[in-house]
Amino acid sequence: MVQQLKDFIEKLKSNPKISSFDEASTKQAIVLPTLHLLGWNTYDVDEVTPEFSVESRRVDFALRVKKDKFFLEVKNTGEDLGKHEEQLLDYSYRQGVELATLTNGITWWFYLPMKKGEWSSRKFYTIDIIQQEIDVVSSKLVALLSKVNLLSGEAIKHAESIYEDRLKEKTIRDALPEAWNKIISEPDTLLVELFSETAEKICGYKPDIEDVRQFLIGFRDRFIIPHNEELPKKLSAIKRISRETPLRNTKRVKAGRVTLQELVDAGLIRNGQTLYFYNTRMFKEEQATIIASSNKLKYKVDDKLYSVSELAEILLKKHDFKHDNHGVAGPKYWMTYEEKLLNDINEIIRQQRGDRGR
Image 1: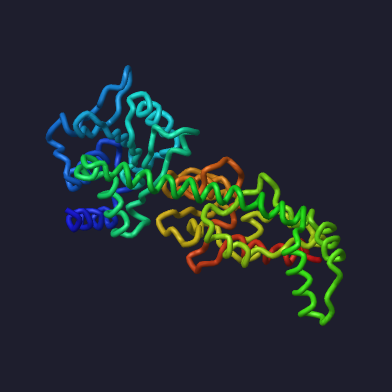
Image 2 (image 1 turned 90 degrees about the vertical axis):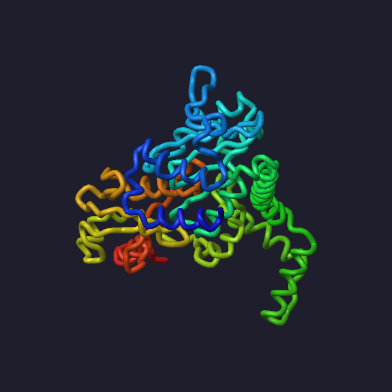
């Protein structure tokens, strides 16, 4: 089963038409074959029930394991899944369904509908058959959606384990800023001693403990993390961000806005040039064309115009990197084919204008 599933996923990855499938094609060409390879009898409507009735509404598929049901809602491959999760989870919650999936054939969002909290917090895992490695995709599909694992209860156990790990990480992430702010606001003995010893190693003289304490208190406003500041989704990203982001300097002049037309006029980019969405790596299938005259990007998936930041936010949510409504610095998420970040190109203009002067 696993090898056949891997072979099928590999074919999907190489299919140039996959991004244009409508909902019916997505069901027939992606979802039903996937279920079949996961051990489900897709010809038995009592086992894989299409258009399952939930009060006055319908769910695309209900996978029946004895009395339990797994709800599966399908959209076309270009559809934004975020618009549909509340409906699916509402149906699932009312029916007492423990596991549910929302998919456009490419992206698969897995939920534990009976958990507490907002709908979005009940999503515990995302599979992207295009972006993720075949081994990862196949192993997670088997673990969470195969008939044998749903029948044995292993799928629920695995889902709960992922959910708890995710909840633990979120709890830690939420606590870190509070812990940091507490340490800076009320310098404890260990921090003061460490600071004092480090200063002694640098200059040869050990400062008075009270002087160190007053120094930390005097500069604490610069070190405090605002409550509304967005932290990295993954703790492992903190090291990368801290390395790339310099400490603020109070003499730094506020950076001015740079338009795409300015970059074109300076010869740094070309009108009509293709940019690629970037977040930890380049997503070559997520392309947008520069339309300098309107300071917009034309997204190649839907041929619509978006601002640099607007489209970046859409794609961050699409690929499950973002789960809030805070704005983003769009130029940080677009890259040329030569792997130059738009944000770095903007910095050239700012330097020329003196925006980055000290």
